[in-house]
Image (tube, rainbow over all chains, first blue to last red):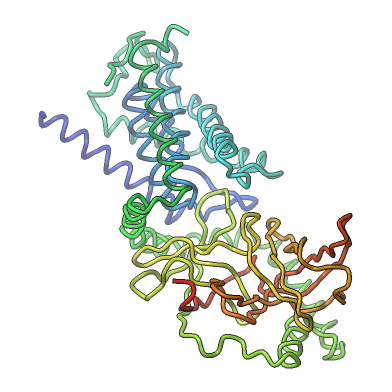
Length: 179
Length: 274
């Protein structure tokens, strides 16, 4: 294990912990129409975009586990949705522009996956007649949080991230390394 | 799709397997898994509590701004209601008064002799509130899984998860929640079920058409053998009565406790719950 690997792991943990604290301590209380932002989901999507599918999947999985532990949903539900969306972000954007505006669609995908998976395992309360309001508010906040979150993840992963040099915002078409 | 090949496909399959396993273990309350989960929740508890205390001023300011119109309207509405209430006869006042009078009539000493602890309800995190509330007392305060939770008005639910400093209470409004109840003034004992948020409990079996039932009757816990709830804890008042094709009376029971605005609950250290 190299010093760079350790540094990257520590930075990742710090970013994850900071976003978690920010969510439970502050952002969860900043509600619009009774609905709160989902910064850990934004982090998962950003992780996939910056670090590729494998790094994103791991970050999304841990972020989701943290969310499950405090939100009271069955452990593994958010972990599944967040990891899935991070992996999707990493896989499907491998050959395209990586800009902040890619985050909100993946956040919408993650929230929908979370609710759908919940329905599958019997968590019927996740989908109600206010789901579209929830989605709208979460999307609005993800627009606000996308750029700073991407910046945070890039800082955490630095040179280890898969974003390569090239035209501004453009990523070279390379596949990310597997596990 | 070309990108879903080899390792990525295998990893996604593994992800599904791992998460399905985790969800299954959690939903089925497998003991060693629950202990690990509770320990993790216990470790996160102080972090969450500290973060919420630190962020409180900002959140309060945000709520003051975003909810100003709502609070103003609510304030005006409450003043109007207060004026109406002042003019009413005490006998027809609030459901709480009705409940008190029923308890007095039935000679019910509501759980006065059971040791208990009072806990504060903490804010539910996330966008998907379920049929549980978290409170700030856990195993260090003597709380155990299965203990009943009440307010001065009546039964709230049952403790389903306990960590060192926090507990999770499943509310009686949960559609999966069942409890034995007794219809005060009769010998009828039946099972009540939750039907969802803001909905009455339903008693659909055990009350034959011969049992005299009317709207406003008090429903309490049955306290039959091995019940996890002590006897005579108020559950609610009958709000509606119907008759099903099997000639059973179906009762819709409005919970006595205000489940939507819980700030504090009392957890009863009831022996049968352990």
